[in-house]
Image (cartoon, rainbow, N blue to C red):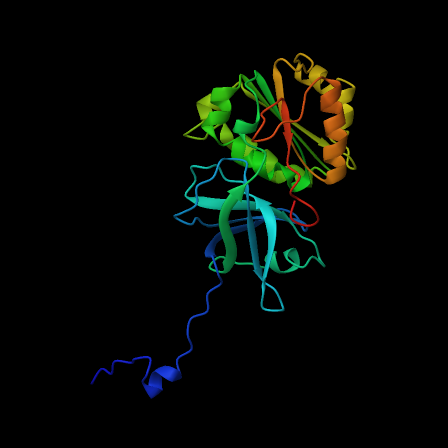
Length: 279
């Protein structure tokens, strides 16, 4: 049998469709559906991507108009991970998530390798305790920070407050935190340092109520057996809806904490990049 080499100019080659690839494409390596409305997925990591735990990137798919449809998503995996993890809500009529929720292993997504964000250690002054305050998928940047050894090197205590409507919606964060105890890299660092305070707002559970209420009333301090928040020793990071962020900022400032940024580190920082479906 004679082999025929096909070149771009040969008639036979013209009938072979060229492979289709998305711009800045990365391959999906795992997908987990946690509830009817929440899912996480992992993708390959661009060799050129360097990021600080807590930062976000723009990811997406091609829109119906043939143009990239992108949203900001926090990287849920730590900076040392070989892959990138994301945690997302499913919005039935959302331009992006209505499509993104159907991705499967082997599919491609668009990932722009230009990380940015405020929820990073560099944006906070040194302190003794750090509070991670999140609602819903706002836990994603803290999923990154809780798996980063630097977090436990910088702080004596790490407190993860996560609020969702139902207990089922807390599953992603709960399983991640439970797994940290047996993590080969940071298991020993986490022991005795990481405190987890999950609450629900609609379904009865061990701890109920909004983060703002539990902080303002002092209930979280009593439940965890810890001292109240002070500007001298406590630092905080906040990620949720615009309304949630605004309410939490008021509570933190009532304790004397001031908002910081990459350019001016202070006692707390807020991620304001997420509007709409890409929280």
